[in-house]
Length: 182
Image 1 (tube, rainbow, N blue to C red):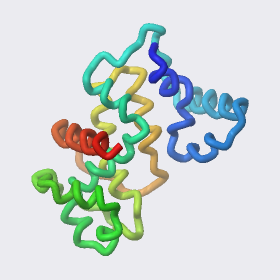
Image 2 (cartoon, rainbow, N blue to C red; image 1 turned 60 degrees about the vertical axis):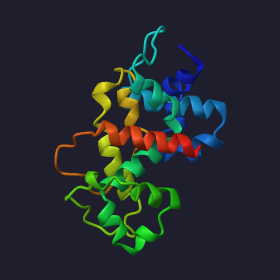
Image 3 (spheres, rainbow, N blue to C red; image 1 turned 45 degrees about the vertical axis):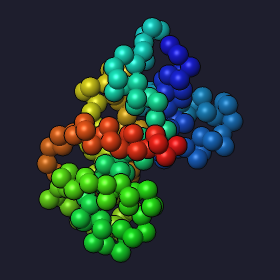
């Protein structure tokens, strides 16, 4: 197992969205406890010693793991382009999100919309994009798929009610866009 996978496997608290700030300031003993608790409570499977990311999707996902929430926001922005751009909160979105929304992804826009306004629910784009990113879980190794929900966690809010069918083209575009920004 390569060093890039060690953190994903043994330190899930470092990328679990609600615990990131606490984890960064915790002592090593506290970090171990947080990681053990998360692995136990979420029933995160451990890969074999020879585990690897053997598909292009898994390799790219691991390469941008810390930025997966940004990928989800871009997907959510593309899916909710008309809804977000008609709101006051849409003008406050980061410039790179606005640029991605205007990049010709209008064919991805969905008719289903969040119930609350963007300024009242700033995590709406993340949640809607995360639903699509999580729909890619069956294409990932068994030990990685359950971990995908950790960096995309949001405490509450509405999500798409219809079955989410991931668009791999949109996912690759959002991932490439995020990679170019870093």
